Image (cartoon, rainbow, N blue to C red; front, side, top):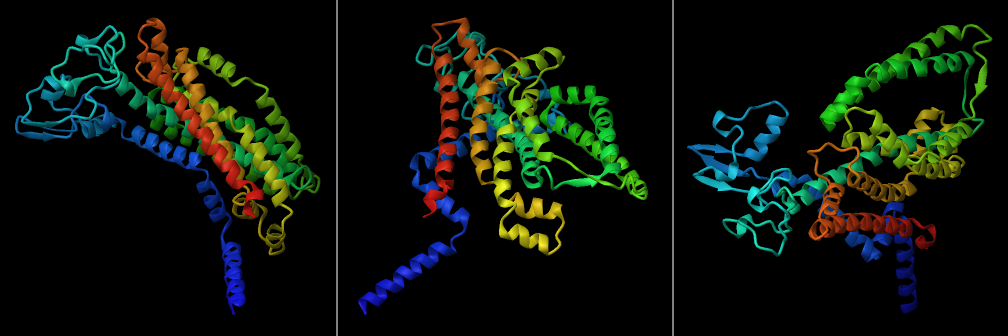
Length: 440
């Protein structure tokens, strides 16, 4: 009887493990790596700090009652920046901490990263004496030569670091997944198009790129220097214009198919073309490319650096997903979808790609760390960022001007080191969790 119960329990355990989804297995394996789990928690904390930077470190109050009126200056600043509102005359260009309030709540760090404290300039140490009214106004990590608060700069620099990592790798992921999946799924013999479509698209692509992006180059450049939101809107306009222009040659193709010669199918060696493109991109040093473009562009910006890192960082993702698609395209569920008459596009985007994205997560985790390190290096050199943008690399660079100001080197350097390291730990944790040998 006891033997039967043991056998039944063992059968239930085996059945439960078999019923678990692949992602449930990956999640369970990832949780076994305590270092990776804590690194992920720290990443969530860092992202939260970046999102709430304006509420954690700001010279404007979070809430104040002034001359009988209630204000939320930090929130008001968002509306003013978006040109949805204006500051009242009595609050325009004021020193917020000097006003006489009926009631006020300041941010935990009552300093903006770009604002200077004239009473505590010329490198005030975190542990040294500071000219402050009370402990509430102390510069906990010291100041630089101009009297800017280092802790406020680190908090706001967190937003820039996370933004660079997320935006650049989002661009790289879209390009890498698209091109890598096309190369892996179609190979060199599977994609066949008519001769008319091939000729018209070869002519149409450069023309569409020229009219959609090159003729709007100054608009895109100004949007890059303005803000991230402005660039996104301008880029989407150019992208939709490109799609509209590409419709023209493909519509003309419908009529030309009536000519037998032009309707002849031509095989496109997609894998070879994309593989050679990957090799060319990988042969270009990213740092040298950024330096060259920043030297040409009249208005360098942090957004430009994100775009360049994204446009050059997709090759690793493309190689990974290409390798996965080479395996996935011959599996039974792909053959079943083809036998049901599904279109190639539906099979590729709905079935093949979703089942090949697992190794891409590892590449993205390592890629974010690399993007943050690249941006910090460029900011350290004073390249590609506006003067009023505070980044970790720029804070670290200020330590070169005065060697005894150790805090300007230690704290930004530690922030860069910790952030890059924990993203690498998460990447290693994902690598171990996704290892097929651990699914046994």
